[in-house]
Image 1: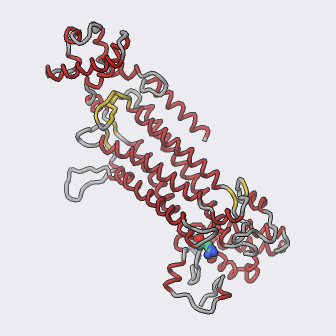
Image 2: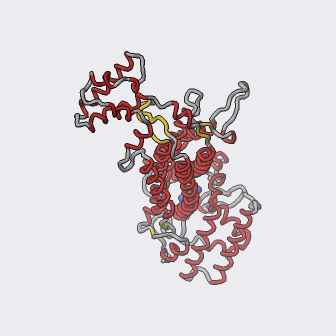
Image 3: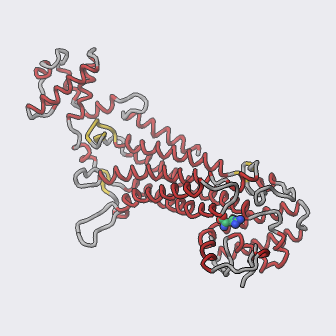
Length: 459
Ligand code: ARG
């Protein structure tokens, strides 16, 4: 029967069912590295206060280093009673260096320890995710530059609306992801604050220098209230929200591409590398990567809502409910890691059928341009909207294209129509007319690409 770290006041045994219910080692072992780093810093802070001699500090430091090597080389042997990563590391340390290991936890609690581990872990993982997110933004901007001359129908309500540049659509997602990147940076800044030295709740009685701990562990600030330090998990909630929003954007992009890759649209084709076939229908090539991306959005949202449910009713300060913070955090990090990389790859390897996009442009999508033509001749837009609508109906009645109406036909609707109305029937011109900031003209889209590229340099 292994001795429990907290076993002193107990005489009865723990039900094995309860052991299994209580343990978190099978998932929090992922934090072994930051847990050891935090302990090494804490040992130094204890030495400064005379709790450890220089020699003891050195022994602990090296012992923890050996534990790290065991984890790294997959040699670490879990034992019954290793309740979580903190108890497992301490148990192994004491096996390696003996009773001096028992001095490490002086003034520290697993409460400030776990809060520190979580923040360190998320800080490192968050920077990886930021890199993947920037790679996705880069993939979109690069593709937008290459495909700058491709026009396609823009949709509202999934009905053909106005011609746009395909690059303009790609860049709309780049700007979403740019906001996601900014959100991630902001939450990582709030994450990077030190709880260690808060003790169980009331603070550290050995006057360890928390400023020293903060510097040693690369935090930007010391959390100024110990109760807040041990019970705050807002940084987890923010991360889960960030994941949810980012997946929502990925999901909407995936949905567009799924629709565009149907035979009915045929605008894009996914690379074989990101498609799969059917076990029954030999002809099938399915956009599974995109469907998984869309589906995983729900999973991430579930992690966020699940955690917030657990989080909302917890009394001050540490309560075991807080152990429920880890699996959602790990799962969202893993899901986003995979999703961001797959999305980048899908975008960079996509085949775009520009002739199909071009062929889907129809004259009726220039009805707004027809109304704008009259606006330029001084007719109020409210009237021109109506007149252009009548022209659409007239073309329907005559079973011809809008552009096939003669000047005489149009003159029956308004006297200001002249021969130069022929210039309206040009998709390129329509797109180039949208040349105010943020519009779909070539120059404006190129400006967007430039803006994103410049921003990518700063991050
Ligand atoms: N495994 C625990 C968690 O993840 C560590 C903190 C335990 N603290 C305690 N007082 N029981 O939250």
